[in-house]
Image 1 (cartoon, rainbow, N blue to C red):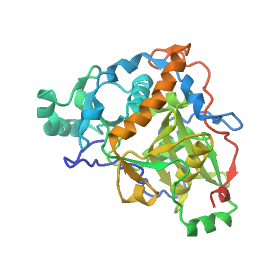
Image 2 (image 1 turned 45 degrees about the vertical axis):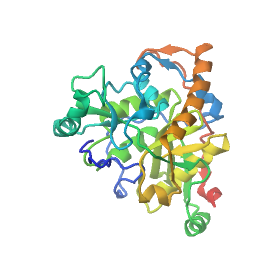
Image 3 (image 1 turned 60 degrees about the horizontal axis):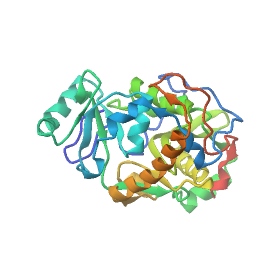
Image 4 (image 1 turned 120 degrees about the vertical axis):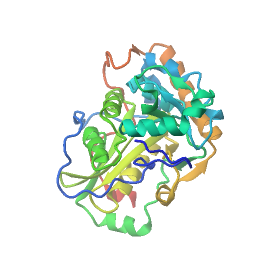
Length: 331
């Protein structure tokens, strides 16, 4: 994923900018879909995340001073993409940017190798090629109030009259991943990253929102939750505005149980149109620290320790019920 723009942009993964519109056919089964969770208590309250498992992979991120890192470059390179490392990174305001291929990795080394040699950008242990995986924490961070996603009056009116559309949460996580990855060039949602995200979904920390037309999945979004912050990675649409509806619906579900912020990672015109506003990274990290602190206290009281990807145990409760809802409620 990774031809990185020295000015701070990146090719292939632009915050919540949607993937190219897909035609009506089903996406290729790039990733194995997570089991459907129809009727399962996916979201009962933000506090449900406080019992998330403690992973052995967390230690690699504890010493990173993300609050002091440049806001327009990578905070670190290297490490691995196990579910433990991934969750630990999100808890510290970081998200991964895997290189699409060896050429993208070589580009990372050419651009940032001097900073790494000077000790300005640390290398994390693990992985054969450290430049194949970058970790980012932009400053400022664009965020949206959980219940404040902007859909506009015209779309709201259309939704009230479009009975064929309905929404769900965590019903088709694997399908949403596959659709977000399809036709993306360069590839940033690699199989390794998808596997880690699917594992976090099974543990109750990664979530998807879906928009349906009848039984066809026409839009979706996915991300990772840390307490009252939901960090959204990517979305897709097969009908105009379906991705916007997915973000608004998942945000409304999150806000209804006490969620505060949707983190959309990278600033730009598209996320601004959804209602995103820049937040200084120091404040964003403070929000995460409060959420992670609550999770850590609960985990220390007896949450199960899970070595990277082993012994998942039962799925955690999540944020809201998964029952289908008419999108007209967003009006």
